[in-house]
Image 1 (tube, rainbow, N blue to C red):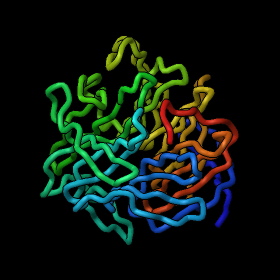
Image 2 (cartoon, rainbow, N blue to C red):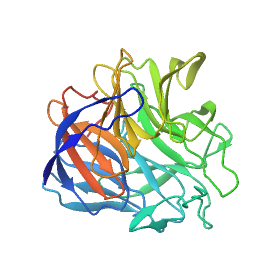
Image 3 (cartoon, one colour):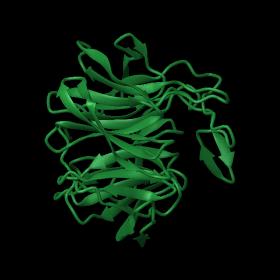
Length: 322
């Protein structure tokens, strides 16, 4: 199936139109796409709960699965320095059917914590065997509530967001963490954010980007050491009227944020903001693939789609790939 993305106008945003094709459909709230060298795409199905490999012809195979969507929720994935996939496990949601669309939050209150919820974690997935190992349920003495998205730096360290859990009358104060995969170092780098979601690094690895879901804001900090940012450098790159999910970075430094109900929000290095609409209301993430990294793989959770866009610029090659 093919189509054309019609730009969605946001605050100050210009409209864009880009061609796309549907690679796979029928996915259970897809997120966290990772393009692999063989042309397939690894992604998480949060409501699965499972990690799935989608082949170029759209066939889907389960790589790993967790027991229950009430106690586990793979929410983001990235290839680590050892070739394994590392997964942000949000600890599960209470799922709600709203007019045929499954949502991880209750209409009206936004509550999403399952009664069976125990903890969030960072998990390691061996892509050859499917074995899942829990690495962290706490970092720097702080319990992980709902890890969401992650990115590796060139030194092999892992930056990840903890979105926290939302209940009917309160929610967790959340932040961004940094950890090594060997367990030798872990810390909380940023605290007090409101629903942090997407995380990414600038092309030179010197800037950390974080998107907030409920505020529709994109933040940036200068990195001064492993797991440390200069808090005085905090700046808001986008302040929208929408809601942001996860993000990816282009080779030229453009940050592309999945904007719920608005498609993709492009924040250019010069500050210009534009949008590309995604078919369906819940674009959740994007990654780059293809030999020239000019294919944008986008997950849309409401309709359960994996889409492939012809992108006008090259995406940023991540520190590790497979």
